[in-house]
Length: 243
Image 1 (cartoon, rainbow, N blue to C red):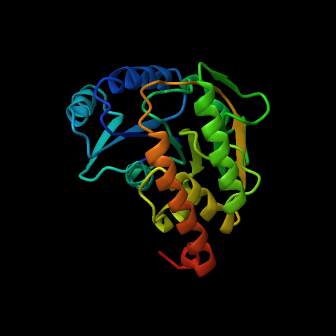
Image 2: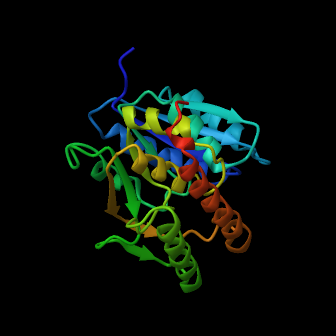
């Protein structure tokens, strides 16, 4: 079987309402492209009908594969999707499509011919945020400052949910991932840095979604503890070991 050029991975936890519209937009976009592609939905730990919604959609679209994980955790879903994907490029896509899917070609050749990892950035020069409350922006900037001080100096936005990995890079990095929660992004990018891969921050238009799954108080504390774990793992050489 010929490998697709692009795999789009959508982690989906309690997304029965947003997922149908997102999949319609994604497949409408892909039908306008000239390259072969696939879409993977990884449902994990949902308490609603997300899995059934995805499976019904897959019956009408051969290019969609659906996976189920019993446990919740965005990092768990992303790792499953990345490693199940077959594409030359593997694109992580949040189910809320807070970045328009039409921006995706900017992450790929020929727009970025040598890119190994491209991450969407709401802070790089040229990025625009729409409708985001000031307190959410402020919280995000404070957390990013901590990320830069403890783990990833120089990266202005590690938490945006749209990222693209070249296949060989993804298959080197993600088996080394240990975190399954919200801080998985930081860990994956930290591993990439340790492995010598170049990370490009790409400015995007981004639209705030009030139905965000992140709890500022609860998840910020958990993510801070995860940053300390990542820092400890780096010092102990955990990520240097062969998976």
